Length: 130
Image (cartoon, rainbow, N blue to C red):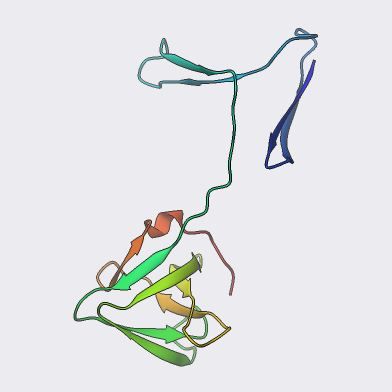
């Protein structure tokens, strides 16, 4: 039997198993703490999820906006406590790429929990390259 798993019309996996020449395939989840607990899915729908990544500068703080992810790059703006910006992603070294008001080019801010809070957590931000 050949079964295909597609997400948003993109092939994710293909399985061929001669022991099962015909029939239906489903997915199930198993609880790690209790392997006797199973949840079976006969119908599975996967939808694209779109997050809004936002960061807010904490009260009393200021953050430099730079042209790239590094302190030696040019400063193009300054954010102050209460400012909220749309984040586009993060670099591997924890710089957040943001939209800059009035510019088509993004800016970068160094992420620090002491200076800003982001929703959702930066761990969920996509990795972007400069």
